[in-house]
Image (cartoon, rainbow, N blue to C red; front, top):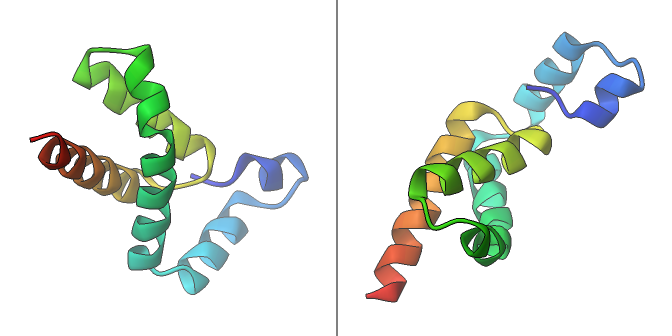
Length: 88
């Protein structure tokens, strides 16, 4: 998935993806995703009680910011697991 603001400016999607892949390591992307999710988690938790819906909203939030599905899934699982452990 490409950042929508670059696509809107007419930058080719393949060019965006290759540039991101070259200069943006998965570990770094995962950490950035997790950081964003930690900030937004309480906001989205207040909007829904259902874990499935919560994951969908978090996934959409990350997708809108240009994160790929694999990184987003990993980040969501890790952040939700850590939040669950903190609640215990």
